[in-house]
Image (cartoon, rainbow over all chains, first blue to last red):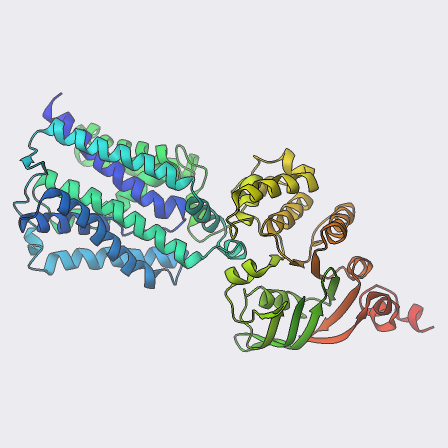
Length: 288
Length: 242
């Protein structure tokens, strides 16, 4: 396999993790987020900085997840006092704030970005080979997919489904709405942080721009295109929206027209996404 | 069983419930009747903790539950079937029932109760996999009641079970409510605008007007009262007084 194809497949795997992680809050619990790339970035920077400081990859990888989850908690506690469109605006603001923080801290390298991030090391050996890295991503992604199905069909998953469908009624059932919504954001952030860690060690260089609103919207588009709440949908959405820009590269500047047109057509003809059951309009604004 | 003493609630500046006291004895069906906006639903919401009581006491058995969260109140044994049914429309009939038992942990018994609900309302068994939003109004009401029963409440608060249903559906639902009360000994507090149905089923009743209880007593007395006949049972002014 050519290096180029391997690179695209690795990006598909990383974005699949991001789409699946966003699918927890948007798909399972119905909490729209327009700032998911911030979690991706927090994981990437945390993992990169920790490894530059000399700690090993397993520590950096695990800490990236935990640090991102804690910042997810810090966002969720105040943000979940509002819902629907207002929550979307709060997460949008969070994404912008985080990007600006990355640009202005010394430890993150400011606008220059973080340079010289060491590669992934397994048992002390640095992993330089692309096929090896792809295998690592696929193993982690596989584990994530299994845990997504387990989560979806658990008691927690049912509580999220109830909150997504009708949060007032969920409280009649004795479900602690605030607690479960917070949990959804925290778990979602945790997985996005892990994806960020993989990304940072793969590219060896990260800068704030990668984790801005454009990426947040991209991840949300993957979830919406694949079908909100659907696990195979999130995977398919991530694959399509990562591969499509590559395929459309010959169109150069016109590719955004094609790309935007595809999304518009999708919303008109199949608003619930390729594999989903829920329309985005039912989550935004809670109209029913 | 359930006692409410001097309950006051507010929606912002609006004083919705102004000092209501009522009680439900074990195994009893009690009706709350009154017009639109009288405060009937608010009384139920305050009991189940969805709306905060500004002052007053709510006591279940021996324990005060006034300031508990709605999750705790449900666990203590008060089930609330909300007005307008409020199903999880995007989830199946089965999932709605399972969610009703959310506050319980005894898996084996939950399974048994699922079967019991499908026996009580056979239509729910036939439509198990169907999205609840696609059921008819009457079926939705049955599901709403069954879903709340899955929490195994000792007292069931029923808000307008007849709302928007065909008369034949209303009688069917009332039959089921009666059955639950007689076979399971379930205590019920029933809010209704359909005063005729409610007074026909309940043993005692309260009449609520603008946040206050203006009349109470056994339903036989209420049904005989001239004011109630005129205001809620549709008798003309002349028929009553002449």
